[in-house]
Length: 264
Image (cartoon, rainbow, N blue to C red):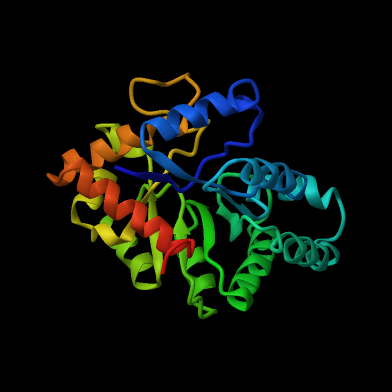
C-alpha cells in the first residue's frame, strides 16, 4: 500500500532534529508522497530544499492568513500585493513546486477580512493563470470563500485543507472541483458532523493529510503530530466507510497524485 500526506509542514523546526529519520520510517511503512504547503516567502526556499533532497516530497507556495500581518509590516496592502505576485511567480519556477497555497480566509484572527480577501485574490488569479491547484485554509468563512472562488474558472481545482464541515458544504466544494483534505479530526468521536460527511462523500473527493506537526490524533493531544500518522487516519476513514484500508490507500493516493498532476 502507498499513502500520500497531502498537507504536512515537514519544514517546520519541530522536525529539524529527526527529519531524515521520520521520512525514512514513513517510507518503510508505505508513506511515499508528501506535500509541504507554503506559509510565507522566507519559508518557501527552505521547503524547496527539503523537497529537492527527498524523492516524492513536493511544495506549494503561498501566504497563509496568519502570516499576512508579518509580511505587510504596516505597509499599505495595495502596495504589497504586486510584490506578493512577483514573489509567488518567481518561486513557482522551483522544480518541486506543484501548487499555490496555503492561502485562504480565517475569521478567528485580527487581520481584517478585506485584507485577507485581497491577498487570497492574488493567489486565485495566479492559480487561474498558471492552471495550478490551490491549497486553501478556511475557518468560519466558507460562504465568503465560496463566493470569491466563484469569480474565477479554476480548472485545476484544489483542496480545502483540514475540512471539518458538513456533507452539504463538502459537496459544494466538490462540485466546484475542490477535494476535501481529511485529517485527524475524524479520529475524534465528538466530530460527528465530519465523520458522518466522510461516510457519504465520493471517495474520489477525498485526500488525506496530517497537518503535522499540528492537529494531533485523538489520544495523542500534546504530542508532535507526524506524517507517519497518515496510516491511522486512513484506517479511521476505512472503518467509518466500511471499506478496506488497501482501497482507501489506493484511491486517496491516486486522488492526491491527480490533484497535484503527478499522474494524469
